[in-house]
Amino acid sequence: MFPVGFEYLSIPAFVIGVFFLWKGSDILVDGVSKTAFQLGIPALIISVILVGFGTSAPEFAISVGAAVARNSDISLGNIIGSCIANLLLVLGVSALIRPIKVKKGVIKREVPIMLGATFALFVWSYFDLLDIYHVFGGIFFLVLFLVFVLYFIRCAKNERDLGKKYEPGETSKNIMFIIVGIVGVVSGAWLLIESAVTMALVLGVSPFVIAVSMVAVGTSVPELVVSATAAYKNKSDIAIGNVLGSNVFNILLILGFAALFIPLKAVNSLDYVLILLGVTIVMVPILETGHAISRVEGVVMLFIYSVFIWYIFPF
Image 1 (cartoon, rainbow, N blue to C red):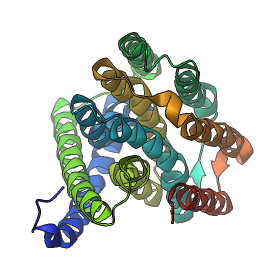
Image 2 (cartoon, rainbow, N blue to C red):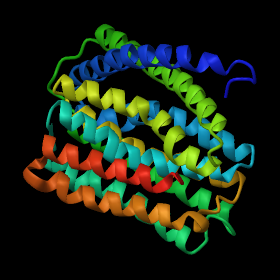
Image 3 (cartoon, one colour):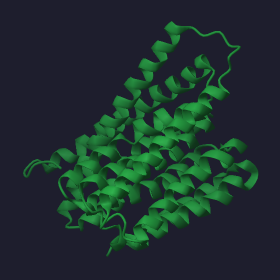
Image 4 (cartoon, rainbow, N blue to C red):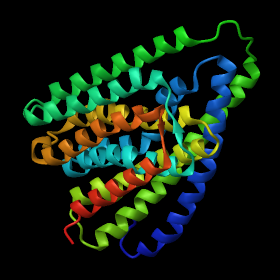
């Protein structure tokens, strides 16, 4: 948030943030696709692990930082809102740009993992295990995250094309592009978040509503720009892998870390957790239908997200 008397800086910060996001995402998508080609690893694997982590960095900074400051509303609200925004807003906009092709492997592997993580969040919230036993809950989610990462590393090794000749120099260059792209995307997201929070607080909106809407959208901007750019460049694996990976990172890694510090009061926000679970379940048939997310389905997803935003604001 900008200091008192400097609120006017939120507008130029927003513009600069958009530029950083646009340029950073362009470099990031190119770096990921070229690295995957060089190493013989499917782009989906790299996008789920590497890009998912990079674009989840704003959520990590906001939610864990809020947990350290003992603000459970911002910490949990940001995670829930960001996951919903990823599924409806990010994939919806990306599908409008270009229909997203979904491989059968995604339906069998990545989608069940995301659904399982979301269901785990609902169960632990329902039984109040992220409040009374929040430390144990945090450890449980972090262990699940470790299993997730090890599983995908194993998948990367099994699916690597061992018959391909690699050029280490080119690979190093492409990895540098990924790093530069992530830095640009995260920096742009930080500027957008600061400007959004400043404007929202001036309006006097409650912390949880700010977190689940404006902050969540702000922290989902990296996913939005990366997936939209990937869709435009016809890199469907990156477009959808980024979203699925980001949601798993948000729930298992970021929420797990946040729960180590404070009770998240998830039982008080059970209705929002249930909405997230419902949206995740609805996404399964959308992904399975024709193995692609069409423009019509993208419009429906954006409509549902607009209804969600209308629902949470007390205006």
